[in-house]
Amino acid sequence: MDTQSQMKLFTLNSNEPLAQEISEILEVPIGKSKVVRFSDGEVQINIEESVRGDDIYLIQSTSQPVNEHVMEMLIMVDALKRASAKTINVVIPYYGYARQDRKARSREPITAKLIANLLEKAGADRVISLDLHAPQIQGFFNIPVDQLQGIPILGEYFNTKNIEDLVVVAPNTSGLNRVRKMANILDAPLAFIDKRKAEPGEPEIRDVVGDVEGKNVLIVDDMMDTADTVTVAADILHENGVNDIYACGTHAVLSDPAVIKIEQSPIKELVITNSIFQPEEKQIDKMTILSVAPLLSDALLRVQREDSVSVLFD
Image (cartoon, rainbow, N blue to C red):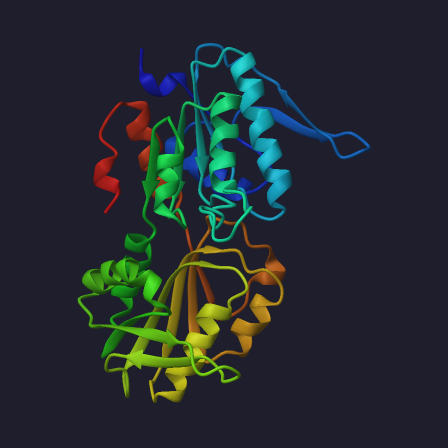
């Protein structure tokens, strides 16, 4: 039997357009299911076709509203398990709560680990995700976790633009490994913004380390929530005499008023992926959205055929 014939896709409410793209690429229809809510907000899932003995791929980003989408995902996994699915592979393009990956202060939770525990307990057999904010989250699971990378998709786009005198910039030192990968793809030099604490009562000191004056720059980040990091970096680079400023990132959370900040910033073009669905009111002229559907589709097909997925990690 063709292994792909045993493959079924399901999606919930977080990113239906991305799921539909994956469905079209794989030529596997999205399974019939319904999410309903009781008057008090409780979530109920109805799976409207047989999944007995099938390999299920459930596509759900845990983006805003995060708690709603997390509960939908957990309840769906439980429903699939009780319906005798053979395997339950949870595809989480954007893994919410990833920033809560350690105890930074006393009496803090490690919520990223809690989500991992809940997924396992609900019955997930595998997780496929994209650019986990904290790579150690893979170790929070006792099931296989495939973490794909968004940098090659973003890098391929900027390669086609053939931007002259380009310097790739890390907005802070914590993102240097990610930015180094982008610099290698684009065969471009690297710079970063270094933050230092000043004297008490004085503003934080930010210095640009690297030659950026008179250059075009590309700011690289993995996630943009309030957009403070990327817009502040753009302002500092502008003050240091750069020409055109581009920015990119895999996950565009874009909590209010992030879009306004980006619109008013010196950034010429912001390039993001569709790991998180962007409603029309958040899409602005200087924003370009790239699809991760081909990458995820390739990963799902490799998992289904029991082929190596490691070639997709670079």
